[in-house]
Length: 429
Image 1 (cartoon, rainbow, N blue to C red):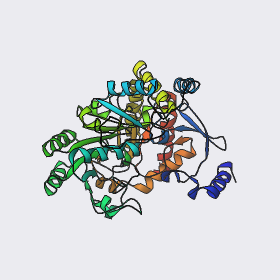
Image 2 (image 1 turned 90 degrees about the vertical axis):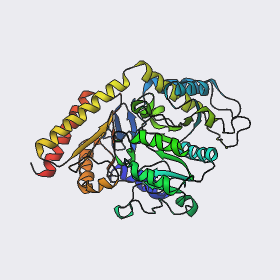
Image 3 (image 1 turned 60 degrees about the vertical axis):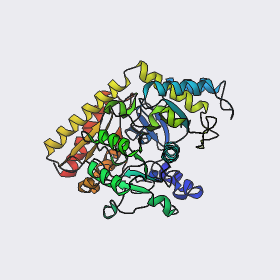
Image 4 (image 1 turned 30 degrees about the horizontal axis):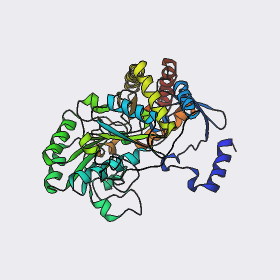
């Protein structure tokens, strides 16, 4: 029995399933003990090029020295106080509002789920309405407001599909589900629920299901429909924010939502998140005297997260981070397309910037329903074989991969060689 297997047995004694987040319980089950730059190491000392990146936070790389040193420096003098504010909170907030188009003001919290919870509650307070709209396949956290119709079974698409036991029926039924990239469906839903919808919340690129790109005019159409119907538009940029641009994907798309949630890449793996938006809405939070929407949290604005956020954004401001990861992303996608074409494999290589995934289907998916055509068995088997060769991509269906500033052309060379070898083995060529 190897060390990972022994530690897994030990972990199962103290923790249900041995993991502390549901999606971590995958095969092969590995226990990781070290992360450095583009690489992670398991308990048996095996090295992997990491493209999972903990679902996306590591835009600079694991244990990035500049960020870590800034955190250590901050912790040598400060931590948290539970009263007033700190210079680190002020600077982190200033940087976010400087770069993100919708961010006239910002509040810091600790996880993406917290941020989306606050955004939805605020939208209900602003509009006086109960219902919200989300899209099939999109993920916005673990709370009752949005925990439905995520990775639904195919026969549950568009139907009532709670993501968990224990959710109140009222929460499930006040969350309406539409089809991504289908403005007619959104407009129909608005018409069927006149004056009842507080907000639309969406991942501007649905990364929970890989990489589904918004089709031309879709985000613009959502902006128009929300304005016309008196509803707020919420971009959940927990994944896209800072990874795709310092200003988030909203800056790339040229579409400004009313509220934005952020996390992951904003602090290169340290726990911090944020909700930002138009000042007229943000002033409703009771952090502002007279505000009537509750916002609190003991760990909000902790020195660890704020120092990491400042250092990460500074690195992106001063170094060619996006230029590097976009170039490697373009190269990865282009060369994988060449590989599958040479081997005659039915595949669509999707991606944007530093992200990509290879769907094993013969057309571009534009919504969750289309992903029924992806060969899930082949997809997962392919990833497991890459893990054997030292390439770590999450061994689950329809999951994205991430490049970081620490990845090199040599890493990409090695990865492409492994991809071609594995695919040749799988198709018998």
